[in-house]
Image 1 (cartoon, rainbow, N blue to C red):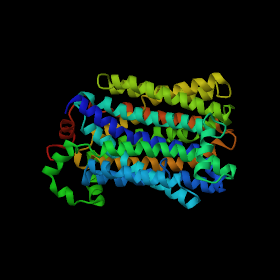
Image 2: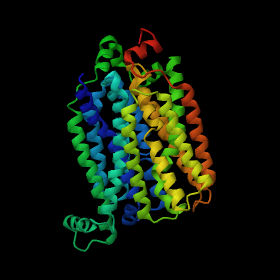
Image 3: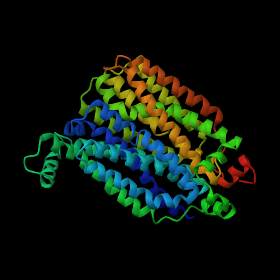
Image 4: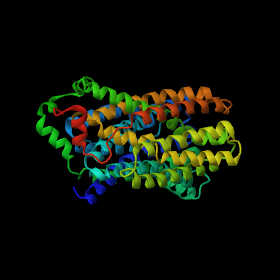
Amino acid sequence: MANSGSLKSTIAVSLTNYLDAGAIVAGASGLTLWQQYLGLSEVHLGWLNFISANCLGAAVGAIIGGFLADKYGRKFIFTYNMIVYMVGVLTIMLSVNFPMLLAGFLITGISVGVGVPASWTYISESSEVNNRGRNICISQMSWGIGPMVILLLGMLFAPGGYLFGWVESVAHTFGSADMATEEVNAFSSRIVFFSLFVVAFIAWNLQRRLQESAEFTKEQGVGKEQEKAGVIENIKVLFSNSVAVKTVCFLASIYLTWNLVASVMGFFQPHIYETAGGVSNEQANWMNCIQWFIIVAVTFVVSKLIDKTSHKAIYTFGLVVAIAAWLVIVTIGVNGMVGLWLFAILWGVQGGSSPQIFYALWGSELFPAKFRAGAQGLMFFIVRGLSAVWGLVFTVIYGENGEGFTIAAWCMIILLAISLIVGFIGVPNTRGRALEDITKERYGENY
């Protein structure tokens, strides 16, 4: 495949990551508006987060989507999954009560989960040997661009934002002239979700035209018995191989420990900036947006290095910076602008060279094609599910007004240190090697 071909397909598939991160941020940023419009309680909001793209919805979708991608192909996911996403987003946009909103969040979350393992797998399988890391980084840049764009739109369309006057006009056009203030405000979130609907439609049109992965086609040709295998059978195949089980444990360890920290930051970061840092909501959102810009910029730099430089060096650098960011909290503190900005910048730098890049890369390199997507889906299920539980635990440690922030910071440092140590010891030798060669070395000729 030509270099331009793999880059084009990578960009098309990477829109899945934009829509994943975008759905999480759009859901979190609009919660207050929906709460006021529909009169929701904190319990209602808890349910929306729990079944969303950030937690259970994506976890369930990933384990289903991973094994579907191994059974029916990567193209099967790209042909139909964006339609499900659009249905979910459309349901949120048109919601007039809590059950509709809950259903929309669940459908969108499941679709996000279904698409993630297939997208990472397809990118690796369609990449040239010397561009595989670069293409995975491009997908990660898309994951950063999503929150950055959605945060900007949220601030522009929010009540008091520069474009809120236009939002009011749209609201009155589709509703009555005497709409309640809360109902008008909710249109801010509806419009943000509409932007995701548009991107999903574009992604669907691009992705459904992609050719099936050559790796998957070849696997089907030599192992037609796999066509009849279901999810349970594929799980049995995965866990019957000791090398695969060890690989799952390694990747889940480095990704889970980092993601327990990152998932909390993704959902609670503006809240932390406001309560522990003492800045306004608008300042917190701008800091968060700038941080995402840093993540995208650093990821771009890493994309130029990852196929030429030691993976161990880049991996170690990212986690050392991550730990340094949290050490700022327990030394300088974040109740002043110096500490707050230093933390924000360091956390942005680590995000551009984070374990998620290597999890996506190694997860697609270290498993054979027959259960490559399924293994990633299973790990994503474990990580997102446990992250949902950890989010609840974190709120207890953190306290109502951030009084437990230092204790929470030490918990974060310990988790990141585990990810650093396990990853440093277990970095695989895959850079610059064909997927087929890696599979033969690890699993023998039969795979």
